[in-house]
Image 1 (cartoon, rainbow, N blue to C red):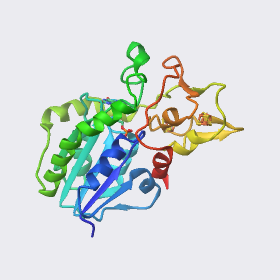
Image 2: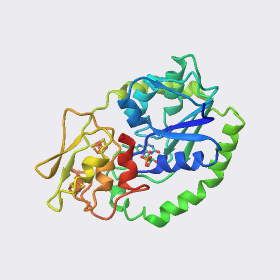
Image 3: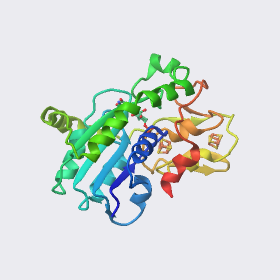
Image 4: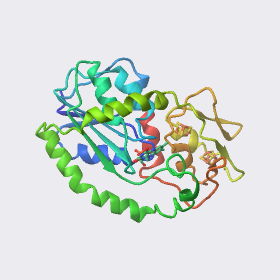
Length: 270
Ligand SMILES: Cc1cc2nc3c(=O)[nH]c(=O)nc-3n(C[C@H](O)[C@H](O)[C@H](O)COP(=O)(O)O)c2cc1C
Ligand code: SF4
Ligand code: SF4
């Protein structure tokens, strides 16, 4: 049995970075991508301590994380933690995690946010703020955030080792979740991606697409309307030509956000 088992989902590498940074602080720790495990049969944990690391999307949890929590059997664990990366706004994530775990007779023992950089110009900050998004998020900013979160990661790892309980005040979060959760669960809006004529047909967008919504057709990406989007923005961020734009929301080629390589993002599927 492994001591600590971490399951992660990451569209641009922030959560992958946190999962890896936490794992190197434990002597025996395994990290596994949720997306790959969703393709396999039953999801049974093996760790004494089990953790989930993922980003906050629109004040909620990404749909594959939701599906993962529905399917997981966490019986091996005597301590369950979650770390959500985000820009810094409110979310119903702690209540949702606790809700799914309660259905399995378990509870969330430790929940934390780690504030990092935004991987998207749209969604949370559409319109005016989006214009300066890419210029504000260069490699130096990523390095600065990585350095600044180290003390928090040290503390989280220490508290996990000690199996210390740390939970936000849930009753109010639970109430808000009752209203917000059906909305976030039923969101099926298309992002409005399109590709301009700078596309070189390299297929990176298809490789990194975690939901397999992007398919290359005659050398160009096509977003299959029948495949649900995870809203991870990997296709948009990993296009080497910045050829993927968002209709009516973002048409700039001033940079994209990447905290991992395209291979690392794509490897969540295999
Ligand atoms: C569709 C979408 C919605 C987001 N919504 C929020 C939000 O409500 N609050 C927040 O603080 N950050 C939000 N973010 C920012 C991400 O949570 C943040 O950049 C995260 O660290 C990305 O992690 P990743 O690189 O592992 O995918 C959103 C990002 C996306 C793509
Ligand atoms: S289409 Fe783009 S945003 Fe949607 S799941 Fe695929 S890579 Fe992520
Ligand atoms: S990643 Fe960009 S350049 Fe490559 S196929 Fe997709 S849209 Fe075209």
